[in-house]
Amino acid sequence: MNLPNMLDAKKRNSEETKHIYLDDKVSDMYKNKKYFIRTYGCQMNVHDSEEIAYILESVGMTPIDTIEGADVVVLNTCAIRENAHDKLYGFLGRCKHEKETNNHDLIICICGCMPQEESVANDLIKNHPYVDIVFGTHNIHELTDMLLNKMDNQNIKVYSMQGEVFENVKYKRDSNIKAWVDIQYGCDKFCTYCIVPYTRGKQRSRYSTEIVKEVECLKKEGYKEVTLLGQNVNAYGKDIDDISFAELLAKVADTGIDRVRFVTSHPWDFTDDMIEVISERDNIMPYIHLPLQSGSSKILKLMGRRYTKEEYLTLYNNIKAAMPECAITTDIIVGFPGETEEDFNETLDVVNACKYDSAFTFIYSPREGTPAAKMEQLDKKVCEDRLHKLNELINKYAKEANDKYLDKVVPVLIEGLSEKNESLMMGYTDTMKLVNVKGDLSNVGKIVNVHITDVKTWSMDGEIVE
Ligand code: 5AD
Ligand code: SF4
Image (cartoon, rainbow, N blue to C red; front, side):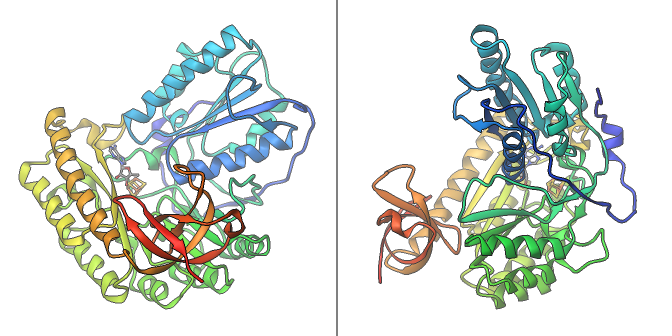
């Protein structure tokens, strides 16, 4: 058993990142067994689940899409807000019931960000003895050995460490059109509300040569789009003797893959070189997710965000000056400790100035062990009212942004059947707008020109034109 602790998770050294090349381990020990994975949280977790799926298949398993009938259930968890905890425990209850009533041999695994929290790991030992395997964000590759050498009692291996970078990681990718590509892990920003620097460790980058090699392979396999992933994606390269993020973007664009995206950028690391390369390269998509968090410089300071309202607006204006058509989306937290009505109104001011294409909005959720959790918390009703008011404004601008597309012809990468209406195809514009398109399966994986015939707040309808 190896357990995490918050003190070690907080440590940072100045040493260059260590890169470790993984070997592929294959076994048929779990032949004819079925696995079910449920993923919570961000794109990093979604991509980690693709690694987990590969590992489960490399020991012989095949997927199933219900817990009923599964031999192994993996819950890949998120710790960013309290409601992520609630969701996990709700589903874990269902797994426990399945194990107690139908399948006593069901192997329940918990991984991802939650077990990286000391209190969660301890709770799993004390109150959830039916959970068989627990691993963290730093040792996904150890799942193979944990399965092959599983003991009857709990198998817990979670490390609080700054972290290494693994190369040669294999994935069972969810799509054969779009692929996630990790370029950077962890975060050193320590925004005062955020648990990520503790659960994901030190900011560390892959070698650019390995990243470019991966994108070249994906292109050869027929992938049309890659999204470069990092908790703090544009801090790429700061921990190793390699190229900058702007230079990496250019190299990835040079591979000739049709579409390049990246998430999530921190405004503080957003350079003029990035703006230049994104605006110059046709295959780097004109879409930037630029978390604001708050429009009040006072709150931004309390959050440890390293920029003021004015600096954020300058960056926004620089991006729009170079790329007027670029879509910009954001994350905003309301109800951070100390946020007054005036502070909140400043957030609304920035939203009015930036007219975001869309936004993820959240009520501040205290995370144990982070500095903001010790500050005086705001009244719940005040937070809810602010969130409601903010969402109304966000929705208004999202619809306005979509309205501009009506009757235009735009390129759309067709991904598959529409979830809402199986007689339609769905895909995204270069600016990441969801479009439901009349057409047949022969268009899947193609970038087609679509005439936009109707726009809603969160999607559009269109028809393919020759
Ligand atoms: N409470 C509420 N929202 C949070 N986020 C991160 N930590 C918290 C928290 N403690 C939001 C931020 C971040 C997004 C991924 O989640 O807006 O950008
Ligand atoms: Fe969390 Fe801030 Fe790092 Fe983003 S930049 S992961 S919000 S600490």
